[in-house]
Length: 226
Image (cartoon, rainbow, N blue to C red; front, side, top):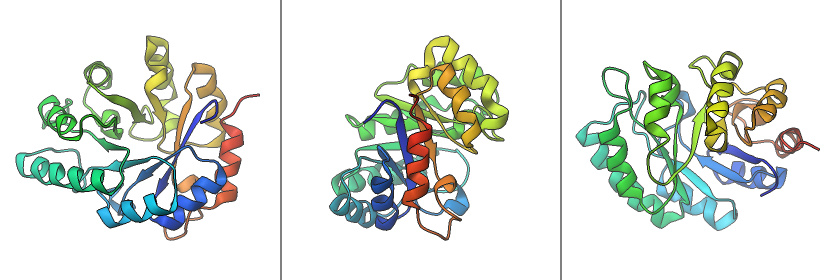
């Protein structure tokens, strides 16, 4: 990896290969972006692993929303075992309870299930009833690699003050900035000390189109400060 981490959403092998060609460091592998990203099939992860050396952070999410009931958790535990065997380098998940607080019981259960692999807490953190309290809860969890966050449910443009605040509080090293991320946000984020960036629609012409290696390459250059 170079100075900053660039993570690209991949839906299939073609996306993964293009992301690698463009200079990405890591993949977030998902299915069904119409639902903001759900658990992909193990066959997809295995096919990507056979064609592309980039580490795969694989989504564990069974449906829209951020609930983690017993049946959902049991299904995700099974999925995690199969996906790890298929080549996952880590996972992406996170849960909120009915009050909008981080569901520590559900999240810790899945951390245990995927251990010792690292994991990313996804943008559920932006949808919490108390964003600052959610950060305090998440940042202390074991094996946490990054927190995928825009700072706001409405995207990075609205969330920059929150991201600056978290970086000032010492969380810059775990922020993975993504969710409506635009090129003009990057200089401010670099100034804050953020060094990990997550792109999906920004490196393709639409979700029905594959990742464009040339667009990835432009982001690669953008997130590197001379």
